[in-house]
Length: 206
Image (tube, rainbow, N blue to C red; front, top):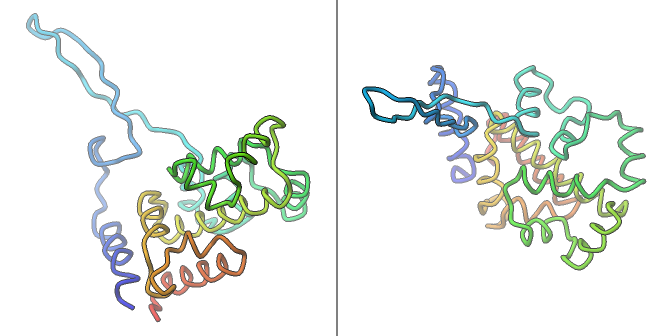
């Protein structure tokens, strides 16, 4: 089962071995802002780092604070606040605003077609939901499920969204060569993905 955890082990070793502060060129979460000024009559550009604030960044701060999985923090990936279970259930039953769908798609860096397939909401249905501005309860539940799985993948890779996205869309031997994202289309499948993540976190690769 080494192929399942190879990338995870390599990624985690880099995190623990390299403690230096990333430069703007090294950190993908830093945007470089160009500022022009004149030096010796020539116009040159000075680069200064600007931190990009995103839902993933907010989620990452939760991880760094040690609040893993607490208070359903994966709702942050939907652009929502953390909610207690009863309130979260009410939100699902009322139907999420369409913005929750868009925010999660953006945070996972997926094209519309791929995310629509992942959440099993086709484009025609999505167009109708955009007109009313809200998803149906069952659609909201599926979107929430994907946010939960993505949140667990982010935890596995210490908040590195690129590594989490790559793992979710890479075939895994534990799933017979199917990607975790494909498996997570159903509730029972998403639970299996989360179990695999739990095993990887504890160094169990079989």
